[in-house]
Image (tube, rainbow, N blue to C red; front, side):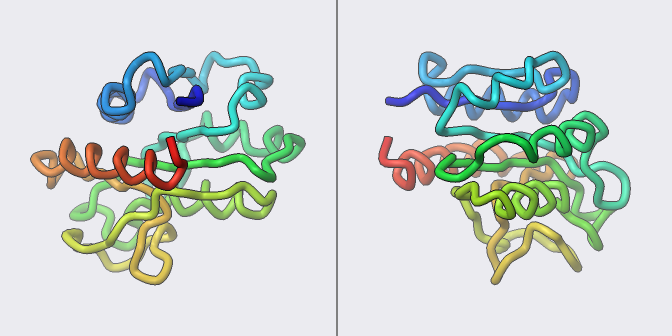
Length: 169
């Protein structure tokens, strides 16, 4: 299996916990966990397969650490890169921008011709609007640890199986 870069902030507790579960499902030997708050920018260039994790902050925003990385990320070659996205969101408190950070990241990467994988169904969620919603699919895995934590492990397992198939790993 090709090495996968799993990029997220080690300091965002729930995102980090979810990333650990994703790494375990892939197999720890197949994943390099990379802290986006302390990484070298060149770390992005080490992987053809990447998973980016981000919570949605406030009213549908990327966390500051991702938001600050995006301008520099524009200079990288994303064409041919295989990217999957996951994020944490709260459908009860933020139904008008549920999981927006995943949608923002997907849109950003697609404008530079990155290939986004791991779309998931919106079924089972209750929200009004999401930037991650495209034709009734999220542009990644959305986890709601505040309201549906009991579903997260199964969602992660299914998503990893899906990614392995889509990426032919």
